[in-house]
Image (cartoon, rainbow, N blue to C red; front, side, top):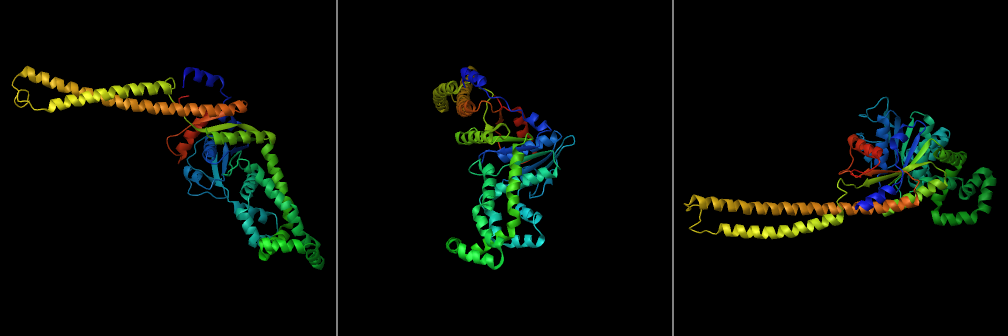
Length: 441
């Protein structure tokens, strides 16, 4: 990166995201890490949890990542729907708990908590409910919102860190609860509930007369057995449908509250930052509090004053010189191995001639060693040039995001040489988050 480029990047740098200030603010009760899949949301959420706990907060980290990396990095054999305390966290009064969303179990808890035992058992045993709770589109995101609301209502923790579900679109976390709520409160469900609401023979007459054509079509599309399961499910869930929408709305308002902070997590790649920009705009449209952008896996260098162009030029000069030196060295070695009775070491009797001969051999060896050093140095220079090209590309990508959203604070997290698999690795990520700039920048 040229000096002019470095000055330009410094002048155009976005405001720095002060992560420690965010974690230390006792008014902040919820931090939501969101973004595209594969950008490090889970690691970021876990690192924030560790750092906040070791700075005195009582933290629970809720992850929806099925890869279970969070459990492994925190030294827990497995995570489930119950918060588990993480050992090895040091701090003045701080604690760290972690849990992984069990989508179906959370749905079961809602049913059990909002209906009498007999009706709850009928719902839990219903085949349509079992399919809905296990894999209906948007159920995972809805249950993440439900679990967040449950954790906040318990008030056992002063900070909840949420790792949003992995999905193709970062907007699913906000959209899916509304979609599921609309389904459960929608016209289709109300039509299926109508016979149960009318009751008795009148209900059956209504179903036979008013719905015969629709149910015939649905039977063909869904199958008679599935349609019956759906109607039985709807009848059992009648008293709960309004609660789904009410709780979804309440949690949505919780996400808009001043005590919530959204962190958009991204990587310095065009697709990831494009989606991050889209999410920033959506959060603004929904009036949700954005704390900033976490830019993961950013590359840096401690020798940015040496540009890629200069490094490549120096490598070429060394390689050209090394080839000449190496050839001459080999020639010298070939000459030195030819046996001459007058200069053979075994027959040499003149001490001065022998000294001269040995000194010449040392010179040839030194020339070969210098050639090897030059070639190694040239290789390192080429590696540096590649790193500087990566840095420049990442800088251009970040600059495009910054030009669209200059108000968004950014914390750049330096890429680690390996994967994070323990608390020490999470602490290292936390330190980089707090620093806010990559190594060498």
